[in-house]
Image: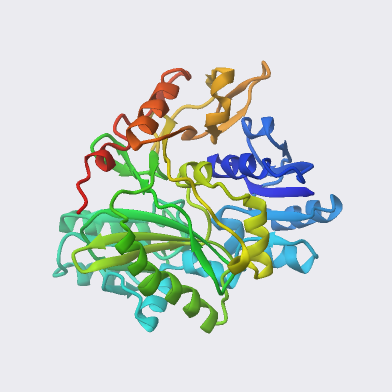
Length: 423
C-alpha cells in the first residue's frame, strides 16, 4: 500500500514509524515531513494547510490511504476533499473536527447532552468579557474560541492576568480570527489525564491513558507550551475512573456528535480533569495529541494501519485494539527560549542506536547531510520500561546522549506520576 501522512512534527513521526510495521506498506509520503522524518518516509514539500496541493498529490500518486494528523487541515476540510477525490482517509470531516476547532461549539455540545465539564460563559467582545471578569471568581480560565497551536488558554490567578489575557486574544488579536470569541470557564482542580480514543462514529476504543506536561519549566512553572513531555499510563486514571468516563463522557460524546449530524471517525482526544465530583472534560481534540502520541503508540501491540482502516470503514467493533501493560516516557528536547523566542539552525547529533527511540519534530536538512534545528520543539526521546521509573530513567539516559546548541528540556517529566498515591 502507498500511504500519505499529512503533517511534519513528532506526532507524525510516531505515526509513520508505527505504520511502517505493517508489511503491506510499500512507501509512506509525509507532507511536508521534516529533516528527521526523511529517514522513515519520502518528504514532499507541500504544506499541511495546502489542501489543494495535498489532494493533487494524493490523486497523482494514487495514494491508497491517507492519514491527516494535524488540527488545521482537518478543520479546513482535508478529509472531505480527499474523500471526494476517492482517497480513503483516517480523520474526521470538517464538521466533526469543529469539536476542536471551536471551544464554543464543544462547550455547547457538552451542555446540551449533559456531558460533565466546567461551567462557562461565552463572549463576543472584549468589553463584555472584561466587565464579567470584574466580579468573576478566581482563578479563571480564558480560552480563545478557535485553534491556537495549543497556546490559546490562560489560567488567570489575578484580575490583572485575566484582563491581560482577554486583551491579548480579543484586542491584540495574537491568534487572529480564533479570538473573535472567547470562553471564560470555571477553574477546575484535580489531576489531568489525556485519553486518546479510536472511534468509527459508533464504537469507541480508548487507548492507554497519559499525562502531559504543558508548562515550559520544571515544577510546572512558566508559559504553556505544546507539551514538554508525557508518560503513560497515567496513575490517576484508575479502572473505576475509566469505566465512569466511558459511561458519562466517551460514549455520550460519540452519540452526541452523531445526533448533531457530525459523525466523528478517527482519533478523538479527551483532555480530562479528575475532580472531587468525578471526571470532567477540559477540552476535546479532533486528532492524536502531541506529545501524547509519542508514548501511546509505542505501547500499541495491535497493527495501527488495521485499526485506522477499521475507523474509516465502520468495523472497529470487530477489530482488536490491544496495548502493552508496560510504561512509556517521552522527554521533549526544545530550543532554549521556546515557546517565546528562540534561535534556529544548530546541527543535531543523535547516536544511531538511539534513532528508533527518537521522534523528530522541529528540524530541517542540514547542508552537511544531517539535520539542524528549525523549530521550538526539536525532538522527543521515548523509552518503554517494565515500570514507569524504568521508562523515565531510560528516556533521560537517551536525552543525555543527544546534543545541539541551545538545547533545553524539563528535568521532571514523570515526577508527579511517580509520586502519585492513588487509592
